[in-house]
Length: 270
Image (cartoon, rainbow, N blue to C red; front, top):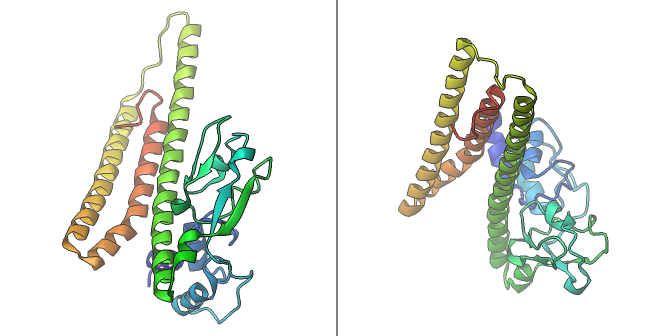
């Protein structure tokens, strides 16, 4: 099995709580570390079942969890004590907390992964962790497994969406800073002129535009394949498309960064 395939397989087994209790910044980084030889026993939310599956997949020796297994949890904000500081919103890895500065915050329970990352930043200690209602409502092992699978898929999707949002916002901030610097430089220039770019720079810029456009088209095709597979009910094709999305998104982000770095005058969209 290739390293990329192993990473995808490990990530598919992890609970996608994005809690960082493994020592890494989310489930995918931990999956990458496991592929490089990191022990597989550092996922308390995954518990013994996930540990056993990871041992079987990776061929690592049998081992016990580094920390006690953690049942599914959900965060609850005592809203009458909330001061609206937004620190929990910033900490949530799946954007499951609603609110605004100096306004009451609340947790979207169905989307909360129980990561506990919102607890420590709260300056007034008004967040409690409780057993997740959906887990408690499960009446059989099968229903519990269904809930765990739903939580993992939703957690992966929302974490990915949050990463995309943060990348987009960071890009917009960089472009805004560059715009302000250009305006300042233009105002300070006696002639108001700007240096001409060389033909080599123009060629490189065109290439980066093409690369960014190609990356975006590739990501679009993967999403189209995913939609088509879901309409057909083709589980294998759906799984393949889902596995391809993270690498396609990384290519888009890398191409856009390269394009922005090539010319401060170029908008983020080629």
